[in-house]
Length: 259
Image 1 (cartoon, rainbow, N blue to C red):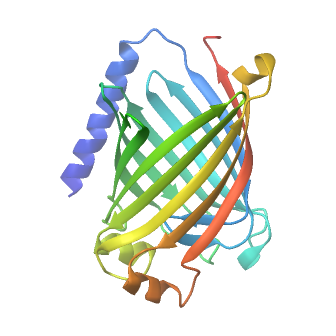
Image 2 (cartoon, rainbow, N blue to C red):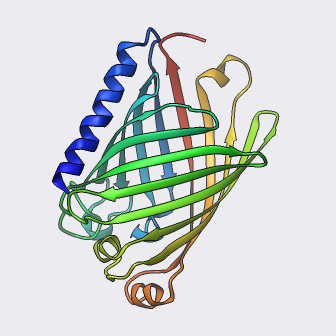
Image 3 (cartoon, one colour):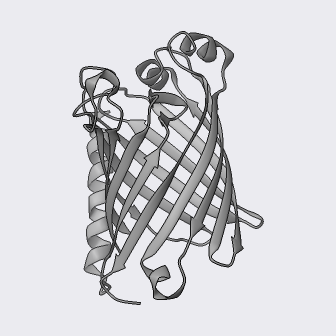
């Protein structure tokens, strides 16, 4: 397994270096800031109170470095205004008609876990395959934890977008499946099963004029539920298994190449 992890990591790095070496373009960078009513991930609740999610990313010809954090706003477990989660992503995306595959690695760290002592650092290799299915957009996402959980999580989604002048509306349905090792690590039950189902409504507003090139206001509302009955019975002893969560945010984008 260690050999697979290193081989995949080296492959990602080589693909990125080749693409950057062949490129004459300039990078694009962005900052996002969201306030959310709670922190829910793969159907599991990591913080029941409002959180602040900042992130920073830079993309250069399909190679993206992205860092994201979650900050506790209310002091659950005495962690107010502390960064409880910090993640780093490095991936490479290239369109190969009719699909757009992405390969990457995510490193998850927990400098101040919202549930007490910090969790150990872990990481996932991931592959995403997106494509246009005529009337909707499809996405398949495979994540394999190569550090702590040694588990597999697979999610798929279908999205449909609508435009109303400066407003963009996207509706998404998604579902997750995971093996026993993943579920034992993140949910506490060693069982291979369907994990979560979700529905998301996302709204983006572009301001008029030149501001639309750099700035967007976003908002979303999500419903997510644990699917498997045994997993649901187990989890509801310590957390909600159905959650409505959402947030509002601001996105700023800057292209070093101009328009």
